[in-house]
Length: 629
Figure 1 (cartoon, rainbow, N blue to C red):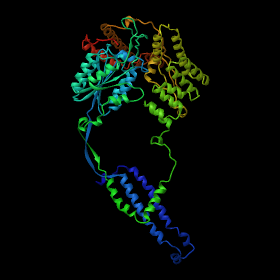
Figure 2 (figure 1 turned 120 degrees about the horizontal axis):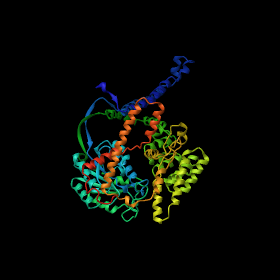
Figure 3 (figure 1 turned 120 degrees about the vertical axis):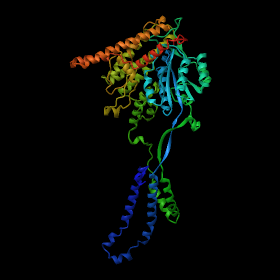
Figure 4 (figure 1 turned 90 degrees about the vertical axis):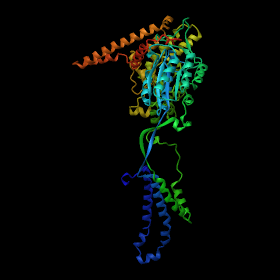
């Protein structure tokens, strides 16, 4: 038993240090008459000095010291034995069904519906770490990205590659996505679970029937609507907009009434995606705290042990000492000691994190972790607060923060925010101001050139109608890509400009470099860059006849794409083997530069997997029913 003795909260033992100081002071106070002993005889000191009362007054102090010792030991919580304790695990299971049709590329939610939907899925996965979560995507057909798993980090890592281009056939078969999710829950042996449908389009009778079947099987169907009632045009792969059979531009609008009816049919709830808070997830996700414990957890075969806390029993030893404190004069002494310890001190808003990092460092860390709201609250500098608002997509608030500073970085970031808001001329003026204050700022020069080209293209386009011009402005704003990266490795930049500049996804930066854009070296400067190639494609002529390929053409294109990827992989393997041989240093560098031109396609694995599964199913003739977007 004694071999396992330990304190569960040993940090409380530091409270014995003041007790030692008190005992040391009492010990030395007893020798306060030593000066008299040097000048008086010992037999005279007994008559001259009065110390009996003083000796008697020290008894409360010694009792207070004993109580202090017992209280500290009780707070340290000694323990020397363990008791067995069963381990429970959560039973809640959830399958997220994500719409990957082309309508999710609409830009009525910035930067796009799909981007905001992926952010929400990541939030859902972070909230569901104790339960099981699966992921299904659908367009013209439905496919499983990941079965039910407790590894939320793996699912989050796959969200970045989910694009409409990985689907072998386009469409909006909500019923197939619901059926696939119901099949995952049944295969896992889940009796009660939740299907969370994230989509933007309307649902038909087949979707209502699938939701009712899932409800009868014991699974609720909740819907998260993505988009706005006003809607936005759908971009195509040629830089224009998708058109219907009559040649009119297709505008995808959110249909909350139909989605609400779908949620009612599935026995779940409906909410519209919100960008400012998590009220939508609070509405949709089932609160298991109100359910019985046996309904949401089950006991596993794993057994663990728990220390028996003995500290509370030591508190009983304090009761006699507390009773003595009510004697005359003792309580006054205890109150005086408490008054000395609790002397008023200046109050500061100080937390545990403030012991290890400054507020600007905490804000920078929050930005790197994707918590833009917390970074905005912690940031003491307007530039850093502006960077946090920029990351969260609140460009108006970011612009207001950037306007409070007068540095070159502030002018540069102000130009980025204005460009995101579509105010191109003001953005050019802000870039000019940044270049005037710091002529060598390459990022500002690059972004200024890109915004200037966007402005020229916008002015050169024919003014067909007010609606067409508004739709084109929306696409120009959508095609702006961010290039900023948060550096902070240089100590000076970390103190002065840590977290001051706006950041965006690294995936957009890598995509820009792979399209042949010159790579800009941030070198402590951060900001946005815009994809010039996409901008040039935005003015390409539209071909309405190519916007609605039939099912056979889509399948043929997907097959050709898979074959071309196989050939590229074979060539790359030959090049790797050749590089491993005896090549000169110059030849190896040339080979590496050539290999960097090969586009990085992280979603290629899922694309080929879905294509193979689609071909194995025989390319169902009913898979593409409904609109091709």
